[in-house]
Image (cartoon, rainbow, N blue to C red):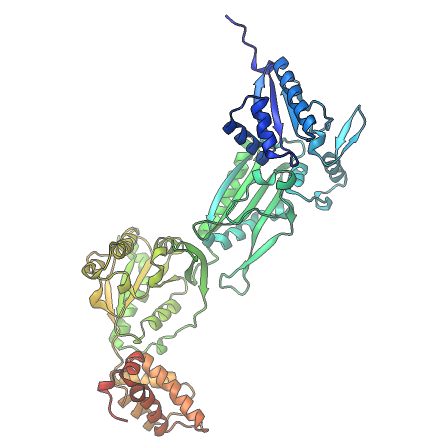
Length: 584
């Protein structure tokens, strides 16, 4: 039987990256000297370019020496500076080149090599030593991420580090930053910014270790302000590298805000620690603490939100938009008393007794349908309910955002108790028989599935609004837990119109005669019509030069423009019924 040499006795030959040697020459060298196939040679050359070095093969010492001599002869004859290293059990060397006696880097791979034949040191090792001797890394100056990481992990080989990554959606960015603000300061040795690569390319620790022209530059830390509805925004790091130390244990964390090719963004957090059980336990503590803060979701809890869709056809969820809507009091909601009583019982009283219902084994989620002609106060009433439920997070969903329903429902579950408002629901949930395509039906199914997928103890209100209830799919009300109560919003009656004239008249001086005339001549109109009427009355009286008191002529002129001079279409657009009006 042949005596097979041990792997430890063989010699590895490594190709080292070189920025000045042509790529084609490297490929030709691998083919002609090391007998690589053309495809393999291209792959090896590319790997060396991206990662700094690549293994060409493993040979007995005599064969390796002959290959190195042949390769170096071709390199010298061509006038290039390409380097090949040999590595065995005794260590690594670069034939024909001096190298640093401290880190082993060959002369061609460093900016400067100092010393004598007895001992040599490279500029990187000098920089690290001087920084250590200065007493503080905060005073050391570095240009590239590789340099500062080598300094920080001095005494630990880079290949002995392991990294762990978590990816967070952009809507949790503010909470993630707040978690980092709580955790990092006490452990931070230094925080620096890093210049990224291409727009859609994720930045990782492997990228930070690149050298020469691929080396990543250090930059000032860049922040982006994220509005969370508070007095001050949350300043979130765009891309940053923390050098950390905890009980003498050095580690690092990299955060980057990455743009996805399919649209939207995500936040990547990567933590690098020395290999071993202690490092992994530390990583898990970091991620557990961050998860606790994100799950609490205090940045957006109790506020009025919607999601911003990215400019992409997929409609994927983007950032969270906080709405600052004026509070609406009960006396500003002009509805019939029976309608207000229905709202109180099915929303406000339900929320108040939700805990007791849960103890009695009853469902704590509830669905309502607001229906009625345009301009009768459905959206206005939603704002009133949001004002009355300050501990609820309100999510406003428009019809064109149906592609974001999974993200909205995910937020509703995270931020409960919550109020989910889906406006113009008939555009999503119209009757299947009137749908024009399978795509429309899939949107309806998505809505139904999301509503059905919530647990019975979910503390979520659903409010669907529509101007055309007759077009709604019957399946919405066909199962408990979808629509539990329909609430009609009729055009205001006489008493309602009188209240609306007073509400929207504001500080106008309205005499009882003018109020009575306005009420009489607006029969059958919407609340939105009366709001616009009062604005036009204010404009007419101001143009007349006497806005201290509104006259009957001011009312006549405003009504004439809205109902007659603009034609029937104008009256319909403004929420009026021209054929039911008394002549002015």
